[in-house]
Length: 391
Length: 58
Image 1: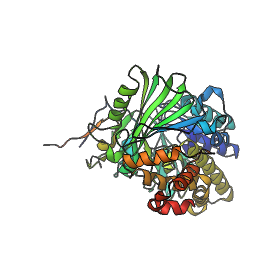
Image 2 (image 1 turned 60 degrees about the horizontal axis):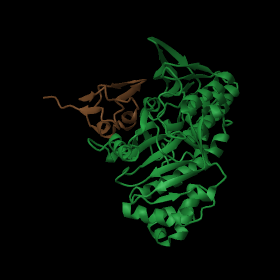
Image 3 (image 1 turned 135 degrees about the vertical axis):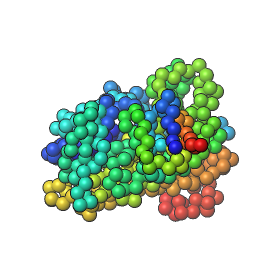
Image 4 (image 1 turned 90 degrees about the horizontal axis):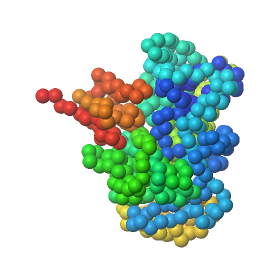
């Protein structure tokens, strides 16, 4: 049984069904893919691991990125990368549907407007879930439950896993889908600074020639009456896109903490945002959700075949993702994030100005930081543990 | 106690993720508050729209 019809749940359901398991996916909302609650950016290579790009759910092709320092200085990462498309801005409403569609075609049963209201527990083991659909309550047994229930995940908590996100590590977020605005349609733009987006960033992700996701995430610690994410975004929009039109308003929370200490229990696996595997630096979670969703189903299928779905057996999942490229990237980016959020605007300016002088050959966080350290050896001392890890 | 301004709430679940008591749950577009809410106000702080308010009873 899979709880949640986002990218993690959809990949889990598709994989489980392909492995020949009797699979059901439950989604509490009446529609897959809405509300969106996402800036919709994903790397091209990562996406291709799971699904062939389809123009029906690609809003825009990205060839570069621009980072705007607190002092307004713009660093473009586009020129040195000319010709290679680095990522896409998706149309999640269509994308999520396509993923769930694939899962259903693979043989999974899909139940929308159906909520997992409680786990079925026996001897401390998860044995299924109590499902509610339009007033009907039914108990459904399952050998393994994969909880892919997103940032507002409850299932893990009900089963004894503490999924609480520390206040300082929740990004309180608001995004407007805006039209009729002047933008570079081929580049994502990130605005940094404590005045613009304290301990977070503000983004403009193109969705077309004159349309974009314009959003912001600020640390929960910095949020409060009169200075919430919406206040910061409104101020920016008023100044930058005064004549733009907002055709959609999206709110959300993005966890930028370390992943859960343990993402499995007896009969239970947590995947995607529910496992807190969002990239802590970028806040990106689509790839990580698809990766952990697929892996969760693979491990579940193996364990079911062997007749052992204990926490110990399911730990293969936890160990595999931690050792993966994704797991390592999360840890590294967590350290980078922790460093960056402590910097003053003046320091951020210095960092961005010095990075701009570097000729970047590839667009990855690792190469960026390595080059930054090479150009600015003074930072090496300050970065301490982070620098040691990256060498 | 916690007051949910339902006309403001964007039902995003940001508050649910930070609740130390597990007292909040997002049921589709409806934020439910359980009795074990202590009124600590963490959720009200992080809410992107300001839809939550801790009301002290007299």
